[in-house]
Length: 386
View 1 (tube, rainbow, N blue to C red):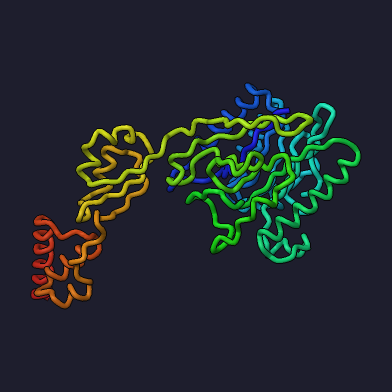
View 2 (spheres, rainbow, N blue to C red; view 1 turned 90 degrees about the vertical axis):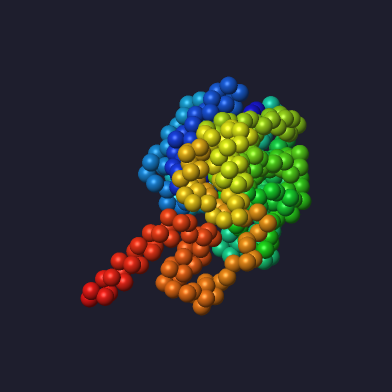
């Protein structure tokens, strides 16, 4: 049996103000192709189907169409909710959808009720643990404390109890989907923090004794152990993911358990580039030529903030989305505070030029000083005539 481990679709998300529905549709097209080419039996979605609890109508339509296409390609679907999803909304109609081969696990009451898949002489029990907010779920789970570790431990205890009862009647292999931050995982800027100070990370040994754990939440594909993996998001959602290889993980099970796990890569469309340098280097160096058609995050390191930096950079890098200014060697230490500038100003022109220097980290040029002088002269003339 072949299963495709995915997570963190974040349908409806934008990228620094750029809509991503087209890119998300492109990844869904590739996912459906993967299902057909590899004869995938089950597609797993380990949480964060949507980017927000109340997705737009067009986003819901896209997801509905994706489910239909995956089913038409021959695969069943098992999904659970993440911290970005509304569990109750995502889980609506779950009993009806199950009859059509779409299995939703968004409620605590269902986390120990697996989707049972037939292997050759054995059963693969797939459990879905939705995102568990400790303060809201600890009591229902009868957890020892309102912490991520305690609620996950309580959830897994229920699953192990169910597995023991099923194994009394024959061989059962286990797969658990969970949307959580497991110890050892590498984070990205685009993930919403699950806790403060790192206490949200659950120990990896909580997952001992399971054949495979399909994790969601972290956007980088990574292997925490042979049986515990993050598939990562299918698209990059922050510039910190510029070096990621996006896709899913193709799993193969037989009656003995997991026998194969292979990364599947998908094209993400326009690439990401993170550039840093002086304006002269950025605009002239050939080493940046490959980034000209990429979405760019650029940090300018000139000692003074360049004039019309974004406009000039976009002349070469048309898809620059983020611009930062970090003078090489740190901020200038010879600059006066704004209060000190005002105190030392000799006239109104000094006040105006000091303000420009303060807000732009760049002194007024000759043309700007001339324009300010002309404007001040008109104001003074108007005051005299009044």
